[in-house]
Length: 160
Image (tube, rainbow, N blue to C red; front, side, top):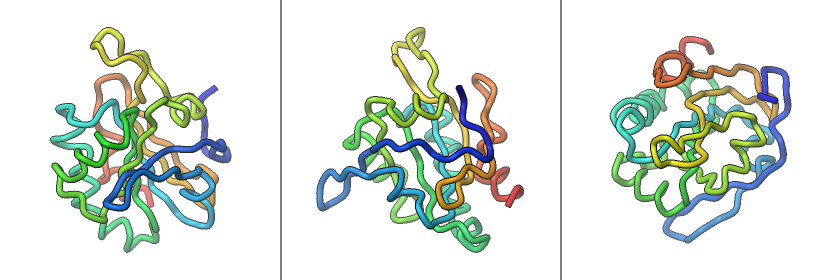
C-alpha cells in the first residue's frame, strides 16, 4: 500500500555519512517536530537526478526554508558513501540532507519502491516529493514513470 496524505511516516532507519562518519537516523529523528520536504529519486549520479532533481532543491533551499521548511532531505536506494560523494559532487553543502536507504527499507515501507532490474538497478525508489509535518504526510507528489515535473523543488515550493 502506498502512503498518502494524512498518513504517518512508518518507523524505519536510514543512514547519513559526513566527516564524523556513518550515522543511523530514525524516521522519528528525521521527521519528528519538524516540517520536512523529502524528495526521492531512482539513483545518485543518474542523468535526471544529477542534472535537474537534486540541483532544483539546492537552488530553492532558501525559498523553501523561508516558507517554514526545517529540513530538505534527498533519499535514494544507494549506500551512505555514494550519497555523501554525490552530495559533494553536487555542492549540496548544508542545503540538503543526503539520506541513504541502502536496503530500501524506508522506500518499501512507504510503498514507493519500483523494480529497476530492466536497467540493472534492482529495487529502487520511484521519483517523488512529499511534505511531512511532525511525522505526518501533508502532501505527496509521485511522478509517472520517467517523468520529472511534480517532484521538482519549484512544484513543491508553489504548493506550500
